[in-house]
Image (cartoon, rainbow, N blue to C red; front, side, top):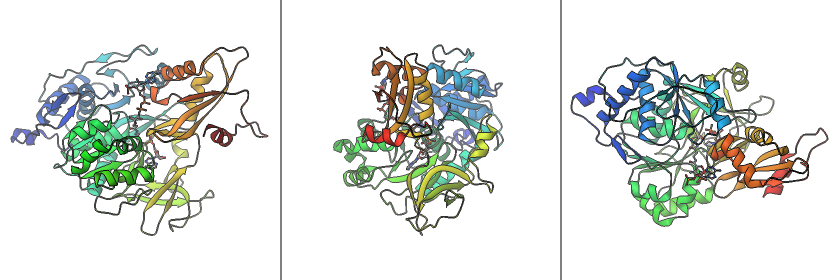
Length: 474
Ligand code: MCA
Ligand code: AMP
């Protein structure tokens, strides 16, 4: 069973977990979760696919578990999604209803199935088939609107079991994080992980250093921005010294942050690498070497290889770099309704092309060097397609041309910067353009900076030279 700790037989035998999940000042015991989520399952069971506005709340937790119990595919939606993004996700996913809370107007009307926190049901559902789709998670590509990543139940089970093994994660752990519940990191690792392993979860709402320090957990998850903010708050950092494992992922952890965290907490961070499409494929092991700047070795069941631009082998000598390809049981089924885009990311012999450039050493240690395309930006651990931000800006009536890049940023890793050519006689402030993106897409996709220019640098073919813009933004 996917959520193996939510086992009604254990509760019937008196083995409850009093603090299975704590979120937004609410604590659910294991029996609360089973009873309340089964009641959600009863209400949602006749649907195939529903959308969940995935704010970090008890409602989201019960909605997600209810779908997993009933075998209904869940589409988690960022709670700060703007109108264009919301409408896209709803139309593209074919969600039939909102489960829990519905957002404001976006042009697509769906019924709302309520989640009642105090309702209980003890109905017993058979475990859905392992190949059934558990989630469609929306994630950005280099161009176009986000694509739906279809994750089946067996992939999630394999991904979580591999991490539990690598990190020696058991029911004796208490996991703490404050990550969003609409991506693999916060949702699958951060919520389903504890429910599978049986370790209590404390979700802090926001991943602030102070909240992490107060939570008193044994395992902490964070994106590099979270760890860099903790490294700048020595008092909070020192409070984490009683933990067992500090885990970083979703973006590169800068070596100085790794070292500062190790110095302040006494724990060298465990780094791991993954994608929405693959879950976590490479990780430092709890009992293994923790090398700053490196993300570890393939987890159980995963094979990796490097390929040059002609598809040739690249040596695993720790120096040579190539396109990273992976294979394993936790990979996705494809992009929803996009057979061509799905085919594009697989090689003929069945390896997934991550789009990341990496080096692998003779011991199997991986170093992620960067992405093949500059048009996928990682800001605060969020994946943001330059193309979708450009489309949003071009939708503004006063914008004539635009080029969006990820500029290096000490806090966010990269920050979204937009270079904009305005229409003649336009009268619009950069802040208004930033706000326009925040209301169309998600707040976290907004440019942190809009730079108005007379023209964009182009090559002889008329293509915008983003590398030159990158230098201008530093
Ligand atoms: C600013 N705000 C606005 C606006 N401008 N709100 C509305 N409209 C505007 N125009 C305010 C909001 O009120 C909010 O404030 C704040 O800005 C949110 O902005 P954000 O940029 O999100 O905040 P941040 O503090 O810069 O965020 C840093 C962060 C966040 C907390 C680290 O980036 C984060 O949660 N990242 C996690 C991403 C993640 O989980 N990625 C995993 C992908 P207020 O905060 O006061 O409400 S999965 C993955 O990558 C794979 C599988 C893997 O390997 O894990
Ligand atoms: P997402 O689909 O949002 O999960 O983003 C996946 C991308 O995040 C990967 O393709 C990498 O570019 C990046 N990423 C994830 N984890 C790491 C890491 N530990 N180090 C460097 N990059 C990472």
